[in-house]
Amino acid sequence: MQSILILSDITTINAGYPFRGKILEVNNSGVRVIQMKDIDANYSIHWNSVVETQLTGRQTPNWLKHGDILFAARGQRNFAAFIDDELKERHAIAAPQFFVIRLNTPCVLPEYIAWFLNQTIAQRYFLSNAEGSSTPSIRRQILEATPIILPSLKQQKTIVELAKTISKEKQLAYKMIANGELLMQTLLNEISQTQLNQEEVPSC
Image (cartoon, rainbow, N blue to C red):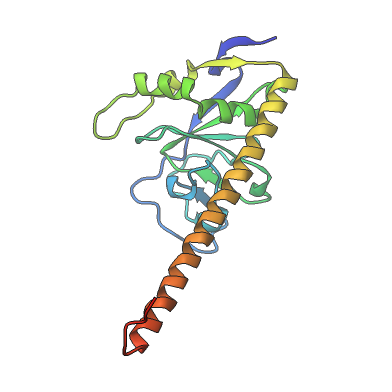
């Protein structure tokens, strides 16, 4: 059995940390900040590119937790990224371009919500409610009012597992394509080098 509710019924939503100006890299600070550049096309966080920084201002940081969802509120791609166990013991915060979504009920899988927000039905909602022309953005009130189709917990788990499988298969396919293209380029380079070393044009 499924129900339809709005996102604020099952979550709390907060803005990312309000940095003043450019986010500067400060090594060995112990504070990592996730920015748009750190999230790939599959909505996965690349922790090896997440820089350390120094917090500015007096606001108490909202440290990210396993199970949080980052929502990109500015720009052409209003995607959601799930904070998985790769967070480990890191002290991390979200850049101001994100909203941090945190579930407040155990009856909903945060992985499912992240997946749903990236689906066409939710993306159409964001597209129709975005504000601004050069840099579209989604206000918190709009995000809070996002309609969510919520199936049973069992169905949520099935969808999440299927999405993980598809994501892994995509990554494998991309890797195979990249390896194939590299092989072809290597072969072409070898052929070109051979031709340059020959004085005569080879016959068929």
